[in-house]
Image 1 (cartoon, rainbow, N blue to C red):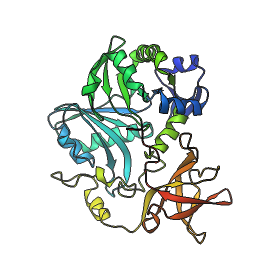
Image 2: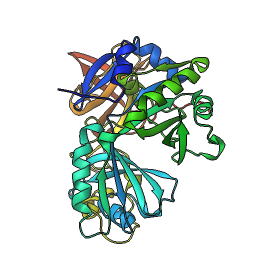
Image 3: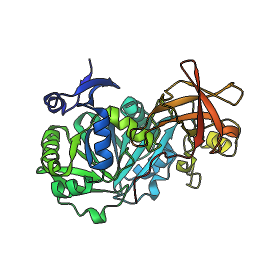
Length: 365
């Protein structure tokens, strides 16, 4: 039985098609996923992300506990700011990628992927042993609504009254929406300017409806998980279970920058990651493009110039914005230079592709 979002009745009324996602019944699309994708690139989309996990750490040693538990240098993050980071196992493999908000000196919120929320909460509790910190999994009582796209700032400014000129990327501020307290963050997973509003679950409908009403004049449409996937792929953002997992280190994924060896003391995975950071032998994540019409999909083999399998596609789609197929894949480091000619076996057909730099899409300055 899938867990319903606090906004399930709203999605039903909007005629959403649902999918089971990590044990949650979430809207896949409301009508055309291509129209929803286009709206986010040209106006704004409204997403229910209440399936994500929210784990709070409070106490005088919350910062030290997170420095040990995660690969990032979280004690260096200032209150009101957020950081993209990862939690790894002792072998350096990625257990999840996270956004961590420092809400106050002794108060952090760790946002985990839905499929890993329980695993992350348990790992944080275990790794916090011996530190003066309390770990509280608030996933079941917290709702998350995102507004993403070029008109998102106009909408959110009218809904919350917040001074968005002072809210930079990866920052958060307490605000009110529809008369309820929310945490307003300038973060997202689409490649566009956007905002995420965390509220108590029982207030989610009020917040959603207020955003919907204001958004009517700004091209806002409800958007499901299907277009969220093509948006994040265009933006070159990894998805746990595709580009990230225990079999990959942050360095394999091209995200070694999130590992902060300069922080004092030990952290889980430090030794393994120090060995990996200078080892250029292996596979790395790359972008692939094609001029054809058939898109490489997850699991399709990547071939070298002689037709030998050398890697695997992790995500792929026909890009709605760019109009041609795009994909991410893991290939040998020696074949990872932009401009390298490779191919993908698309159901028995060898399709030429070219290695390109990520991201595929960047919003206009």
